Length: 266
Image (cartoon, rainbow, N blue to C red; front, top):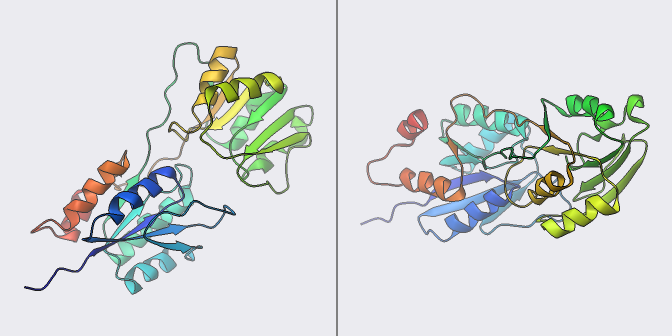
């Protein structure tokens, strides 16, 4: 009796959840996993399985790669704020007629004592700052710093934390802290105290790796500007954990299942 071919899953990665999913799938002989990384981080942590680094050239290029490499299913496990890549994934899945799943960690939820201010974009977050503080801890990553480089913010001082060094345009008064999470609560408390931070800016990335800064800000009574995450493209089913995503993959090679049926039903 012939052995069924392994299900080829392409994971659009770059997150902790993507790496954990690849680790889970790599132990399943019925699954072949390839993780795609954008290549924006100089020294990424490589997951098990096959790895591809670099862009695809838009949804048509991604669809062509999916067809050429006989990908059976696509999982968008990119950062919750990688909206363009998520749109490309949805279009590519439709073009290539493969099922698509979005893997998204839950967002953060405000607790008693939090002084959160919601913003729909980095530009909206920047506009809120002059009324909230003068010494800003900016944890939105090295991309998008131009939103905080406006002349109206020249009086503010920014501590910018990112994995790799940012490129201009950047805030006029800025210190860069190169570091990679996870971050501990004691360290975040000390950072806020040492730099006399009086306002924090973050994206609603969710997860535990960088959440201690929110606790430290709450304890210190520091206001936090939280940039809301973009929605997942319409019609794309969502898994909240790597285990949920692995279960979705297991359904792809379950007896009697059809990819098109799974894609339609989620």
